Length: 258
Image 1 (spheres, rainbow, N blue to C red):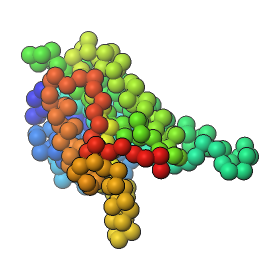
Image 2 (image 1 turned 135 degrees about the vertical axis):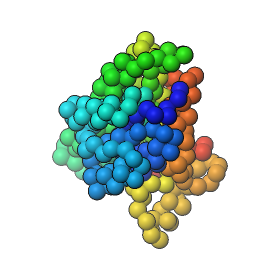
Image 3 (image 1 turned 180 degrees about the horizontal axis):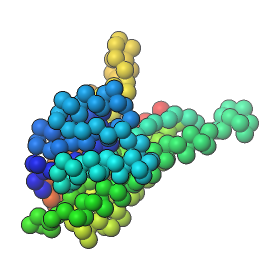
């Protein structure tokens, strides 16, 4: 699928995986809507790559529609990349046998709401407008890439909420792809492993922590680069025969319980 001259929405597009994806799509001639809550990072990035920033809470129907409309103003919306998400660590029960020390249920719901419900919210609204595009020779009108996580399959101790949310993203991949096939929209999901993003911080302590994390990585024996995630995203968007797949991007990593 040719993306040159089309528009795209990248949620969580102001930093990390989303930023790398926004930059690569812009390099390929795509008009990118950086859909994020981080105005301080999103505004300058959008200006730098010739796109638009849209302050977007992915759980808000109104704000996602505004991002979709902003994309349509720049060109036919052919791509959606869902990178927005949050993490939370907490064990299912505490050590004292008290109800109050069990996992905070509101925090569990919050992670699910953003990572899973938010992803679906963006899909349903962006795909609605993608369905109006003129089809190409394959009948294709658009493509979507979701971001899950290695935690969807190798969830560690304390990752109940995060793994549940990302497992849901993997679980929706096939049925949603089947729903959207009738209008020529493909959908795939990436399960990134240990990717070196700003979430790990910087400095000597951060470097030591990342070095320890890489012990679970098979080869190459390092954390992944955000640019490698962006490269796979671009392939999934443009390769017209990739559909309904959940692809691990982890250099063969298999996470231990903790």
